[in-house]
Length: 131
Image (cartoon, rainbow, N blue to C red):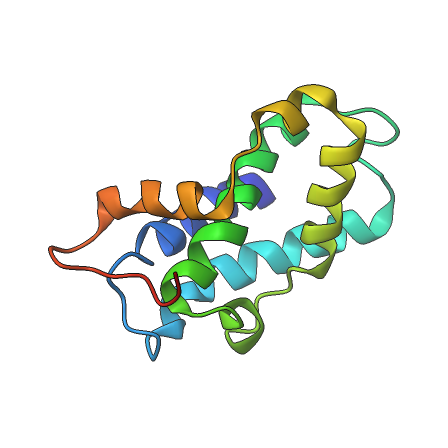
């Protein structure tokens, strides 16, 4: 299932902290899982299960929000594109959720805060790729 693959992909963004930007291969599980998600988002929507948000949406949105923040923070601003991670529909899905779901909009954090929480997984001395 896409959620099983996303659980594996979670390790990709956990590995972002302290990784070298040349190690984009670390994002391959993320790219694979998001390709599956991209197909699901292309089928309908605006939510995963149709016209209303479901538990699956509420589980997925924080992962996507953190991916959108952490990957560029540690690999560079264009890392998702360079790694071949299909994130366009996921980014649109996040924007839609922010506009249409008041609770999610209220709980969203800024990219720097989200990425810096990833430092928990970092090797000693890890630094971001952009400030």
